[in-house]
Every structure is written in structure tokens, then in C-alpha cells.
Length: 482
Ligand SMILES: [Zn+2]
Ligand SMILES: [Zn+2]
Image: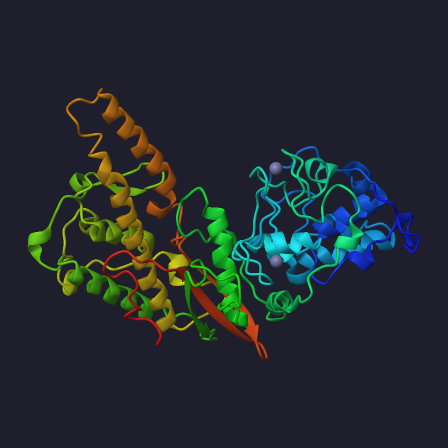
């Protein structure tokens, strides 16, 4: 370790580093400084600083010793030195939202900030691609060998030689060479852009935002769905606090989210009104699809395949029009017991006089359940649900079309056909939740949260992600609020 200057203070048996810690500095570099100045290895750090043992493994989405969320450390932080690291946990700024908008999978840093010994927990926010202070792209790999950085948590790998690459040993920046470089830990000159961001995060707490279903908002089934979700949640909540336009760190990912916000209302939902709204939306869609004529009848089981267990519906051939597929998913999602003729393909339904009574599924009828909204807003939600199902149907069609009907080939044993069948089944596994009314009562591409504005006035914000494909991609609801 480097020579220790004599003027340092001892706090709880450890040399304090407060004078080298800076506003909004993250707990990672705060802990790293304490480690280097006191020559502590990672195990001693955990025990002497946070009164906690290290975890040999942590496979959860949030590490058990994460620097995002401070619950594990706050209660047992030892002495003044341990306390001095606590403001660096992201949760000290935005509470439980910390793990919803940020990831501890890898330490993310700005090279210029790290050169002056600085990293902020705010850099762990996925939506932030650049440093708000320097405009530099945030890194999560070693600048020397490109090896991934360790987790943003107190781990053995990360704190054997903190802020140095676990693969090549190189320091992540000039302030980190394995010794206490306190003369280089000067911190950035101006952290105001970070402070503005922090104030906006704090606003979410004071607005009393409630979003219990946040983790089931999934815009698309993909391997990076979790990261995309964190970006979208950040953007959606950001709209509440004027965060949609970031000063720096902005890239194309900003504004992927769309929303509509309305005040919540007191009167209970009127079921008959809602059924009427639903029927008018259904008529509108069927007219647009050209399904209003009697010449468009088809046999459901010839066109679609319905999975037995989860009732996911997929077309038998990729030539089936995506809007028709979407309509079938949407009707199955909305109606409690869709009338047999409808699902047998006997379009249109019989003329109004003897049209079977429409029964909506109860969760849909009562949406959004946690609060009450006007029938108009409800209609907007139902229409948006169809647009989500339309997007799903189009994505499905685009994904399976190149496979060339692998279950329909004469030569079923040809290697290419077998490979295509395997791909088809993989796709089906990934997309089944979105195609199944049993697995997703409401499309997971839609979500909503509420917040308190003023005196007890709750607002509801319906959120979804932008869809760019094709016609009908982003129409505002015919029944929606203006
Ligand atoms: Zn920076
Ligand atoms: Zn390296």
C-alpha cells in the first residue's frame, strides 16, 4: 500500500477517506478507496466495514452485496468510515427503484471520471449511455484488454485489487494502480449535471409513484429484455419529472416509451358501457380487416393451431394475415367465452339481433383494478391492447416466414427442415406468453403506474413502447382520450 499521510483521521479503527469522496460518488469507489488506504482485502472489507460476510456466489439479478441497494450494509455499517460509504448506494437516492432502473451485472465507468478517482452509482442506470459530466460513453470493459468489469458489488474478484482489471491487471484509469493514489482522487470539478439527475430521481419518491406490476412489463421476448425493461421504466418514470430530455447521455434509446396520463376517477366501472365500447372497437377492427362480409368465413382449425395447455394461438401457415391472427389473440384475451361461431371462423357474427351476448373477462372489465378510470380511458386501453397483439402477430409472422413451413414439408427428415423445426419450436417457446390469453391476461407490452398529485388526486399513466412496423403501428385510440 502507499504511504499514509499523517493528517488522516481514524474512524472506528479504520482510516477515513471522506476527504477523497465526492458528491454522488458511488459506493464502489468509496469502498475501493477505504480498501486501498487501509490495505484491506475483500473479506476484511466486508467484515470491518459493513459487518457482513462476502458471498461466494450470487446468481440472482441483484447481487446479495450489491452497491445498488444498501439494505444489507446500512444496518451494520461500522463506524464513521463504514457510514461514509452509505450515501454512495443508489438506493439512497431513489429507494427501491434503484434495482428496477439500474444493473449491478458489471461496473460501469467513465474513463475521465475514473482518471480523477470517481465513479457514480448513477452510471449503473441502463438508460444512461454516456457520462453526464464528460459526454463520454460509459464502459463496462477493461480499456486495455476488453475483459468485462466485475459486478457492481462487494465481491472477492472486484476487490482483490479494486478498479484494476481482473484479467490483465491493468488499472481502469490513471488514478488506480493498486496503491492509495489519494493525490489523484481529486474528483470531477463540476457534478451539477449529476445532481440534476439525482434530484429528478428523488422526485419519484415524493410523487408517491406506485407501479406494482413493473416487472411484468416486457416489450419483446429477447435475451436483453431485462436491460430494455430497465431503460423503459427509467424513461417512463422520467416523464414525470422532466427527465425525458437528458442534458447529456442521450442516445436513440431515449424516448422509446410512449404514454398517456389521465386523472383517476371515483365512479365504479359501468359494465354495459364497457361491453358496448369493446364491441364498437371489435366492429371497427373487423371492418378494417375486411371481415365484415359473409364471404370471409373460414374454419378456425384449418387456419389456426391452439395449444392445449396454455391456449396460445398460432397460424398454421405463415401466409395467414397477421391482423387476423392478432384479432384472434385479442378476442381470446378479452372475451370470457368467445362465442363458438366467432372462433370457428364464421365471420361476421350473425346480425346484431341474434348476436351472442359478449362476456368480457372480469380482469379486463375491471381494469386497472388498483384504481378506477373513466370508460373512455378503459376503451383506450382495450384498443392499445389490440395494437400490441397486432405487433406480436407481425413479429411472429416475420420470425417464422423464413423457416418455410417446416411441419409441412414432404421430406421431414432433411437436415434443413429439421433445423427449421427446431428454430420454430424455440420461437414458439419464447413467444408463447404473448400469444396465450391464459399466460397474459393483458399484453405484457402494456403497463401502467399511478402517482399522487396534489391533495389525494391520483393520476394514472398508461405506458407502452413505440412500435414502428407497418400500418396501424401507432394510431391513437379511436376510443381513447384526447
Ligand atoms: Zn465522466
Ligand atoms: Zn484488462
